[in-house]
Structures are given as C-alpha cells and as structure tokens.
Length: 231
View 1 (cartoon, rainbow, N blue to C red):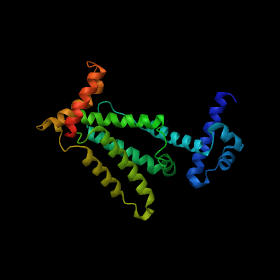
View 2: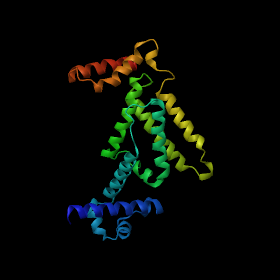
View 3: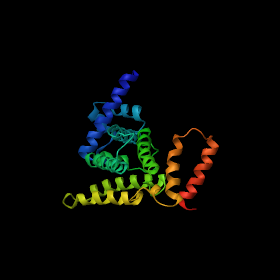
View 4: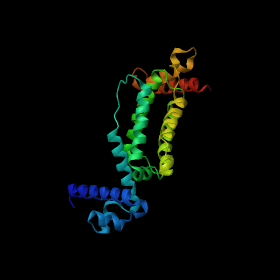
C-alpha cells in the first residue's frame, strides 16, 4: 500500500475507533469491531498498529494531538495568573467534552510520553516560567507543573465518576482555586524582602540567556534551586 493510502487508512481506523469508543465504551473496542466500522478486514489493523494495544496507543496520541491543536500560548499575557487559569480551564473543558477519549488518554500512567503530550507540557512550562520570572511562583517549576496537571486531570476524572445529578460546577472552580493557591503567591515574591523570590525569578530566566557556558549555567541552577527550596 502506498504511504499516502496507508496514512489515509490509518486515519480512517482512528476515526472509527474514536466513534466506537465514544458511543459504546472501551470494552466495545475490539480489532474485529474496529475493522468492521472502518470497512476493513481485521488483519489490516494488525498491519497498521501491531495489535490492539498499539491501536489504543495511537488513539491516545491522537487525543493529545487534538488537545494540543486547541492550545495557544500568548508570549506576553497581560495577566499571567489569568493566563494560567485559562489554560487550566481549557484542559478541563477538553476532558469534559471528550470523556471516553480523555479516560483512555490517561488510563495507562506508564505509557511513554507522546510527542504531542511533551509539546503540551512545554506550553505549560512556558506559562510557569513566566510566572516565576515575574515573581508569582510559590513553589519550584517542576512541582508547579505536577500540581497543575494533577488537579486538572483529577477534576475531570472525578467529575466523570459522579452521577450527573451530583456534578456541581463548584467542584471545578474550587479545585482550580486550590491549584492557584498552591502554586502562586498573592503578591509577586520579588517585591518582598529575601532572596527566594529573586532566586526563583532568575532561575526561570536562565533558559533564555546565552552568556554562560553549559557548565556555568548548570552550577548556577543548582545554587538557585538550593535557595528556592531552602536547603
């Protein structure tokens, strides 16, 4: 099969699988059912994806790529806190709009990070670095990313686990505000006395500098991390 035809067939299978997943749930996604929905013979699924796990991995990657396409990064937001809130809301809204796909995307925490997931996390890290550079970040960057990601994912999965008559929008709002309280300061830390806010802001700005060698930058990062973590 020519590469172009193979890619078109692969796309058709992915679309058929997502439709089946959305309509009937994960248990309905079998190679035979997918092949029938896509108008193919079951061996074609194995040729394209290896096995059912390979197909599900491709569906998860498609989900991350679809979400990534919906994200945008303002290089200079007027309010970095509001920018973070908007990004969190977008992640939650995607999960609520695509429940079956979202559950599949996060069903296997040991699945290697896809290119789309990695790109999405880099957008998040860019938001976090801007917060840090402006003195708003309360914790170190990696912990902030983990908290933001965990609260958004937890919000979606908890919401989906509840009966419809118990789904209170206040749950989502409260989780978002708890996330903001955990990762950001009420006022920019660089306006307060002490080295921690300044060290965190400088740590966030390091990736943009070119004056230091790799070794010098690594050493400075270690010093700044010790200051920001208080050890």
